[in-house]
Image (spheres, rainbow, N blue to C red):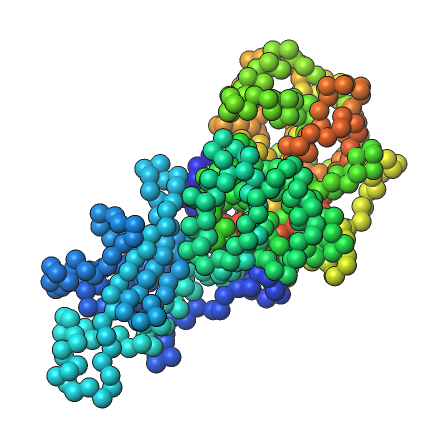
Length: 573
């Protein structure tokens, strides 16, 4: 999987309307290209440099007529770099302001620091401002202030209008400036230590964007559930777990346990700084598993509705799942190799080869509410969802259903409203009559995904949509040869897993899985967390959650050839 820049042009930019937004996710005011005096504020001419707001970037152009001395002081960069940049993308601009003494214009921005383009640091451009001539000054006094003489000092109103316009371009609607962030750091997450990653790579970007921060370091597993359950949601716009995918799981579950769960889930956007081993949430929302790139994507994030799932267990517990549910080889790989974390990603390769050689099978019965079946139909569903998301957008604020979805959106409940009711009951209730029951004698893997990427290089659910009210369900057999099994895993990296004939792919709105036998070593995985080896049932709630994404859609490339679906098929409602 490529990082942000590589994935930027794979879909059309998401466009969002700005009405009916949650108060906590406010769009900035509309852009203006003229100041109150009617002057164009796309261009600011200073004595030694001209700043131009172009289509996607701020262009910094030194004057050819400027003296050597004036060129050397036209701009300073902190921390130092060899030369000032010739341009800065608006996406990378974090803040701009004029100093209180009105002697300097400063622009804070995030810049790539390595050839791999996998890390950002905050730099500051500082432009000296010439003193503005008072209105009563004589012609000679005015002339003495000009350098070079052909360029007059810009009036204060023009300077202020330019800075305001630049911030509008850096934060176009519906992106919110200065998001109030509730940050949770798991010091034990990841090989690099989440605490160190946050302080060194993430905090500087958030602070340069003038985001008010409340930072809490978790002390034990499950603490974030309690913290989220008791959170004063009126004080925050976003929750930012810095961890693997376990901490976002806890935050979603804590918000779900509140008496005002629907309101909380619709108001607080749950984001993710990748500090663990899988980092699936960040890969899907921001197209990267690099912490600093994810931090910038959050600063510039678009509020996006997200499907969430209710999982009911035999003991009566109800969980909220945002990522995946697994049984079989996938669950074994995820859970039973925890003790091999020291191996890094190689732990999954080792676990896979061990299970594939044994041809281990996991008999079970799966009952499901199938909504879209057949890979051609699923590609059409995905194409329609992407087209609608990039024209109407799943972004909060348009007040319209989006995606080629199933069911009504269930977020934005009133004060005191808890989680939505269960349309299909629990795992202990009678099975709905209209569900399809499929017995699996030789199941290898059962994997249901709410997002596309399950790890940086594992786009297992390439047809997943953020807000279509459906889970993508993959099943494979366990009695295939080792060679076929290896080729199937290689097809994940090549982007052809969806089309592999050994892969069964459906879109479902609910399912129930019942293992055939009681295995004392059996594993069920919910969002990568181990749960009792017993029957469980899952139901999707369309648009119940809120997050921030780069463009209102997942950053995965989609099933191979999805964009070749006919125009008629794509636009069919």
